[in-house]
Length: 77
Image (cartoon, rainbow, N blue to C red; front, side, top):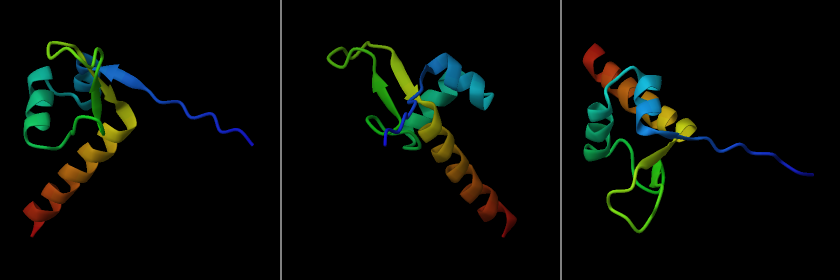
């Protein structure tokens, strides 16, 4: 039995477009701990601090929905 998992990495520009926010907002999500290196994104060239970031679309989508669903629930109370 073979499973064919498709892992989709996208650029910061593409993930920002997916969520309808700016690239700077994606940086803020990283700073606030919504997206974590190694889990939600990696560096294209791991040994370079200036390397572009590549985001895992499905994991970022889950983290984004979870973060903002909790926020909406807190506002509703």
